[in-house]
Image (cartoon, rainbow, N blue to C red; front, side):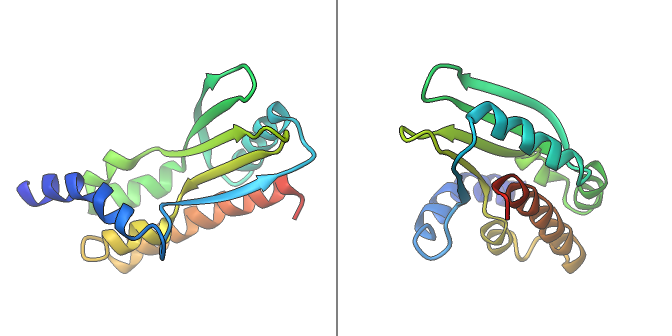
Length: 148
């Protein structure tokens, strides 16, 4: 238990130290769409990939707007939690959206490659593959909204 608490406390420091080579977050900029449209299209795209949007928190509703989504694929979560239940501290996945001054919208979420580096000794290859699949689901939803 002490190792896990230490790992959780040290995680931000490890991630900050790796920021240059392995950023903590993955981001895409979406241009030509209103903030609310991006939010709705992203929710729809995630739903289409069986990524359940459990909630949307609107932190700021005045420009520049900022929201985040709580997203989870329950079958992925079960596979990971059965093996490493303490990973629940990072679930559900949070996807953030914020509006820039030029009207574009930034969409981002945690960089799964960085998580896998930090927890490489705690997760089996099967669990790592589940993380990679969830990552691809979220990435493809963002790309769909972006029109790619």
